[in-house]
Amino acid sequence: MRNKVLLASLLALPALLSAQAPDKLDQALKTTIDSNRASAESQKRIDGIDDSARSLLERYRAATWQAQQLNVYAKQLEQLLGAQEVEKVSLRQQLIEIDRTERELTPLMLRMLDSLDKFVTLDLPFLKQERRERVENLKRLMADPEASSAERYRRLLEAYQIEIDYGRSLGTERAQIGSEGESREVDVLRIGRASLFYLTLDSEEAGHWDAAGKQWQPLENEWRASIKKGLRIAREISAPDVLHLPMPVVAGGAK
Image 1 (cartoon, one colour):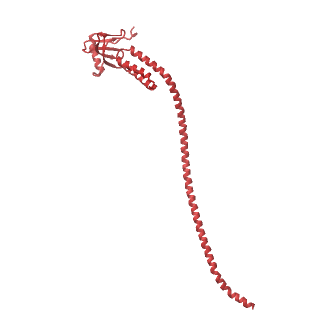
Image 2 (cartoon, helix red, strand yellow; image 1 turned 180 degrees about the vertical axis):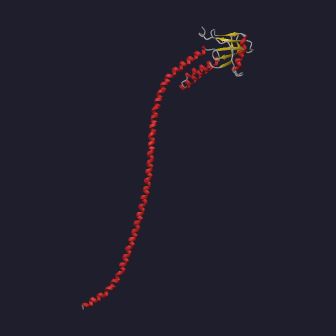
Image 3 (cartoon, one colour; image 1 turned 90 degrees about the horizontal axis):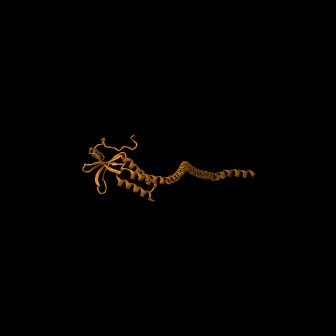
């Protein structure tokens, strides 16, 4: 009996094994598929992490480069601010000096104008109206509160330069000479500011300014041609040439 039962069990074993084999195979396949699917998902996550890391690296590099540029710019700004601070100090000092210069310049200009006024009054009587108007204009400019010190000084130096130029040039003008009852129109020749000569419009009479006597004095007829020649040179009608004229003796020049 026992042998029959054992025999029946042995005969049923292959059938049992063959019934369980498909289930294990399906389980193995399912496990493999699940494992592959999990691996694929893991790879996707890895690829995503790699892309994020690459993007972060690029942003880091860009941020680092920008930080370097900003650092260079900041250093340039520091240098610029330093230079501006030095310039500010210099300008502040210049303003202080300008204020002090203006305080000192105004009295100087007033003294220069007074000297110019006296000089024109005492000088040879040529271009009297023009020169007197220049002095009066300067006086009005000095009293004008709207005029700057620079403009006053420029105009004053300009007037001095004009007076200096008179001393090294020939000049001519039409003027009235003589007393009020016997005034007559003549052509006046200026030799620098050393001497003045006149010639009547009909060229019949010549004369010169006597600085000592403060009056016009006649000259001999022999000087008329030279005065006429000088007038033509002063008017730029004739070429420059040597003039033979009686020049005044400088006081103290002869012993």
